[in-house]
Image (cartoon, rainbow, N blue to C red; front, side, top):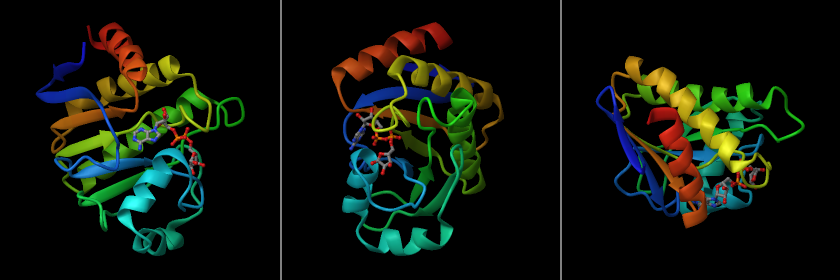
Length: 178
Ligand code: AR6
């Protein structure tokens, strides 16, 4: 399963770069606590958005695991960037709750800003070491719990780097929504 519709909301998987999603209103950053440029997703987003992004986010930092904050998109093709700090696997506990909080809070911010189309990367599954299938299960279950109450969000895209990551998410999507 690469796409599903739940309560009129499309949830889809797409292979690509989170910093290159021009048809999306808000992209989610797998941020660091300082909301600065980093590696992986945070590097791609900050490079594409430009240095004004760090100027904007400086006053919002630091953030805690499970927390999310919102900024403008700057030079990205998106109106907003929602910065989530995922848990470091094996250190920030309970990791599943903290990861779920990232998705919940990002969706809350999207609703507050009347955002229709949002794209997530696989938060915590890179430098922070969260196993991809467990992280996907947390992400999809959290989305599933929230879809009935979303007023503005109509598309939730998961942007994944490799075909292997897509395959893992397809299986878990089937398990959670199938
Ligand atoms: N587009 C989509 N997915 C990507 C991209 C991209 N451009 N780049 C990497 N991924 P990570 P984390 C995938 O490490 O685990 C940073 O240095 C990647 O393959 O970006 O939450 C920050 O500064 C992986 O599956 O985020 C933080 O310190 C997933 O996105 C820390 O790493 C997340 O990888 C955050 O670690």
